[in-house]
Length: 150
Image 1 (cartoon, rainbow, N blue to C red):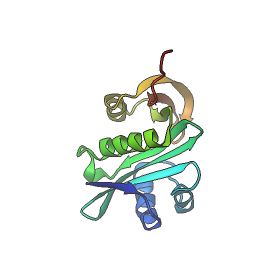
Image 2: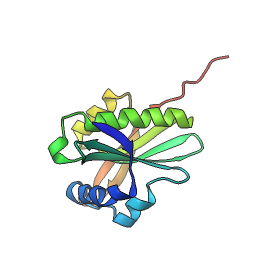
Image 3: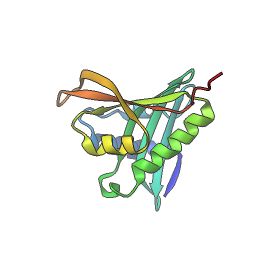
Image 4: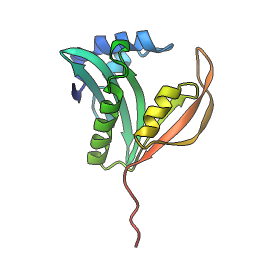
């Protein structure tokens, strides 16, 4: 599996995965706007030339916010999301980010376990964050930069 920065040619495939996996999918225009530039990074996971998943990040100063993490159904349980997260953490470290934060549906136990397994911790709840269906979001954070003691 190859993890790389997403490119414009990935937009239709990412949009397809959005439509297949999310109740309120991003449009191709929104996805294209996330492909780089100041404070934006999107990674793609590729397996044998096929888009297996993607992950987005928006950052400002030393704060990183993960937007979407998605694995194509036929590639689930094969380490795609874990590989994307590990590469995003490496990139976040290189950018000098202090932490990464994300939201996940409180009912999405497999994703919560995945994030916990990568060091994310539960930090709070956003009531009614998700729509279609309405559901609370669990906020999870990963500290990247360790505070030094004087």
